[in-house]
Length: 497
Image (cartoon, rainbow, N blue to C red; front, side):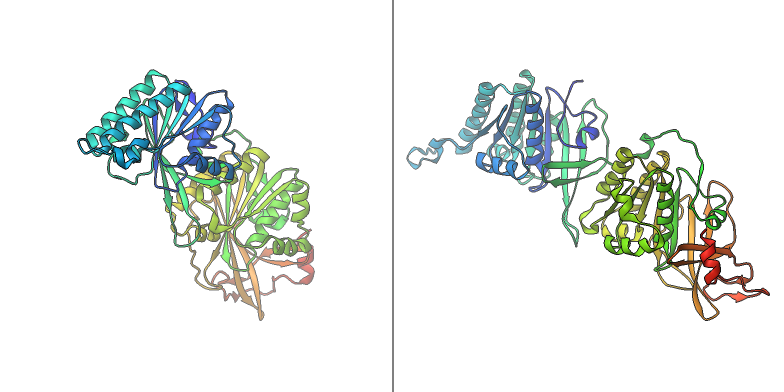
């Protein structure tokens, strides 16, 4: 079946190509959800292809439509006709009012005649009728409303026009008359969280004779028009790649990991605040770029300037990596983002820039930015599965509550990750020290030991297994050996080489 592309980024993917030509579709949603902007993009897409468009407006003036389009940088000129349908002047003249018939009877018939006349004058390929609420009010009843819409539908069908009917759901939200008449229904929704801007999403409720991508999909209204972020389905994206072990660049850490992390796997770095979770993740980013591959970093928590200055003395120059084009690093405004848009940004970097290492720092910020969103774990599951199937290594950080002793995580994603790296503080010889261990690795062997590590001007240093201590993970270990295996200044400087 031939399709008419909508011109809306992402929506054609959900509709599997666009709207079936020669049919009538319903675009419904409350005021402010973006119906008019989306409808204008639909007409402009047709105009670019040389198709004639007609915008019939019963609620907005032509001046308002053109001003709204201009705010998005869109120009309504060639191949698009705007027909501003106003009530007949005779019905507004007090001297010519009559009482034998209800004025709505005359207005409905006159409105329908004007719509038909405008169509026959322009003979468009694409039509937008905005909005059905006005016609519903004139009909003053479900039966007359249904008959009037059916008459318009058959008229448009004979002309082989693709029609988009807009409904702002202001007159009767429960009236589903249109759903049974039209060929397809796209519903726009707007959510208002307790903090932050509105979150918008859409769902295709109906599409006769056509498969489509079901469920809710996030979208945003940006300068330039509506942008839709189709829900990510990892099963649709699979590539073949060789599963090799990737080094961190630190021999002791690679030994702890059983040779490194496997390509196409996800690694969760877990620990209390300040233990060095981000430093571990960026160590793998630096190693990736040294191999001649590209990386992408998405930061929720830390300001980029502080991050750059903090890692530069350790030999990890993120600014230089970004300037060379090897690293994409982005600080996300947590309150302005939806799960769909975030997944779209990550996928875009992997698809277009071929990023082989992705860091999300942190899951705490990802969750906190969207406290009223449902199924965030499912969003993360699909994203990780997609990245794994592209042969991309993903590193996630999660900050646990507390500093020593029993730790609690605000979100449990340990079952999603292929490898889990656990960082801990512990006290020994009057100092606060750090320890690292691997508590899970799906794809092969890893050490079951606990190693001390330190972070200094020379970067990340990992020591020998703490075989002479017990209770390190509890935070207050007991020394049971005969020699002291802890890192000192000289061993720390040599362990990174």
